[in-house]
Length: 122
Image (cartoon, rainbow, N blue to C red):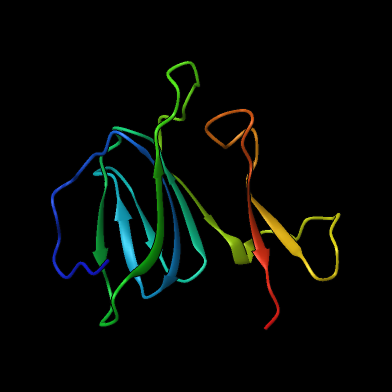
């Protein structure tokens, strides 16, 4: 996704998971903002207004997943941003698969969810 000029605030009916792969940018909700760069992960609840702005000459490249959630699930009401470089590795793990917990039960939308970021060695 490449955004070169400020956009209006948008909102989608689905919840969204973003993983920033490359580039630099900014995410804002009209009240506050978060700087985006490689390895930043974002959870955006449904019907929350936001916008992206590229802040460098490189395109802001990200992995984006969206999905519907059943109505009986209680969702967050705000945007949540995590820097996976700042998080510790999961204590239990195999040497070939080390991961970091990005969002745990208290911060994930639904209590049955947690989101992990695996570390692969090339």
